[in-house]
Image 1 (tube, rainbow, N blue to C red):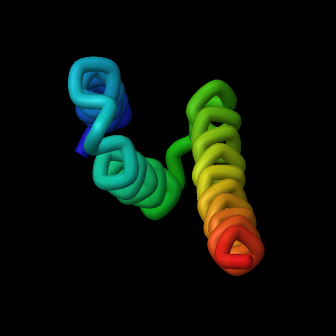
Image 2: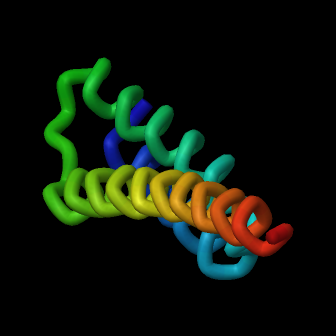
Length: 83
């Protein structure tokens, strides 16, 4: 498959991400798959998409950390609020 085809598929996924932000994790997974396909064919990865992937990974890790932090805060409030 030609690089231009993969690049077009990535463009469609990014458009979906814009239009359907609730499905960002699924779209991110699909973007990762497309980037891996490009790598498997030995084609160079566009630097902006490599950085985009890194940024999304960091954002999702921060979201997970925030969720854990909120849970810990909630437990302290619930535990201390009973007194």
